[in-house]
Image (cartoon, rainbow, N blue to C red; front, top):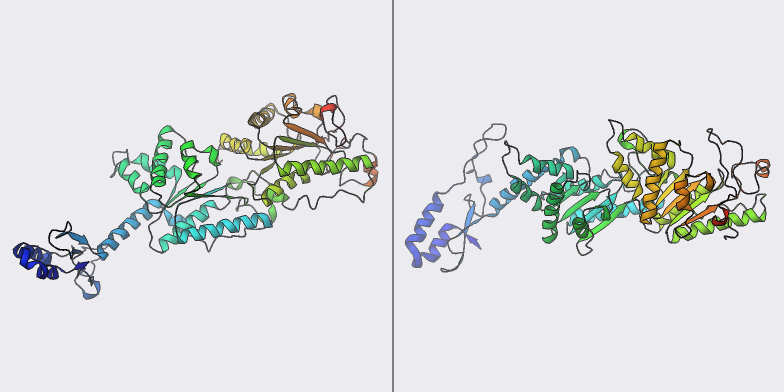
Length: 521
């Protein structure tokens, strides 16, 4: 296509000799501007040096198309490859500077742990699958890639690795945290700003590869929602490669944005079910600072239906043995199709927590989103911690995560400090899930009549809740201890370790509505 100016003059001299000659003289005199100095103030080598001159345009930076007279492109200057490369490099540098990737340079695929640290095989398989998807996407960025997951699950690392991989190949990529993006746009309104909001918005909308981290972490004002929609809608309509991370479910996003994120023709959505990478080794949670994590399911990864003991070798009457078998069956049924509430009551060590964890681990093994598993006193501690001035989150944000979980498992309801604030928060949480008909599993040592009356009414709603009393004695008790247990299956009268009073799960005035594994009236 491109030829030198002299070739163009030779071919067209019979047609427009004088005009082409003037064009040739003009181009012959054209030289690219010399660089007056580097960023450090040192002079650059002259562009006329043989090793710096482009062999295509001979240093002119532009070419003339070899087209006949009368063609629309006749006589037009087109950028040479060297000029296009220089423009692309400048654009890449601009995007890189805006992305602030310097602090994320260490987040690469080589530094990511695709098998996690001490994770069960089911979660490891999910994490490795998402890792492989991200590597493939980095190599060929097409469409949208949406990464869901809790704090510390590895979303940001994988998203930054995609950006760093493309930058290493000199492909333009822009990485930006959503709140920072909005701050960048707001700054355009300042009197010292060198560019307007429209110019900044255009650069982000047109980025060849945009990585948008922590969507949903911003202050959701109408202006913020509108700007985010403008960016994502433009990229959606033009099918521009985009990576998005968020700890919110799609239904929690702006409906306009959620509809585009869930478009299967363009978007791939993956949930990372791994726990916080920042937790301590051996499954012990680090509960200080930003390393807090709500769900403690990782501590119960080994508790499944397969390894639950029906205790056939123990001294137990036939009635209690049948009751335990029915408890397992009830948990299995709920795990297969989580719907409504399942409340399991019984003494300490009877197997309630194991069955609740087995339900959660069954969901993960089936490829479903990981449920939120939280001990009630720990949950309240998490909520209280948000009042600290050093907290990195808010009460509303943490509370929203819990109450909106796709499947919530509350362990040890009734062991919390029964303050008015604690009772109010638990009622708000469970009432929301009751009204919204969200699947919920609750374990408790309390009898039904010992539970907050407001919660009683919801647990005794047979259309939405199964209240099952496990009458088996404690796994941890001796034969003599088991022999001293009450016949109705209530907890032992002796307080358990830690000083918490063990409430019974005995027959109450509400017994006709409570399942004991034998007969429900």
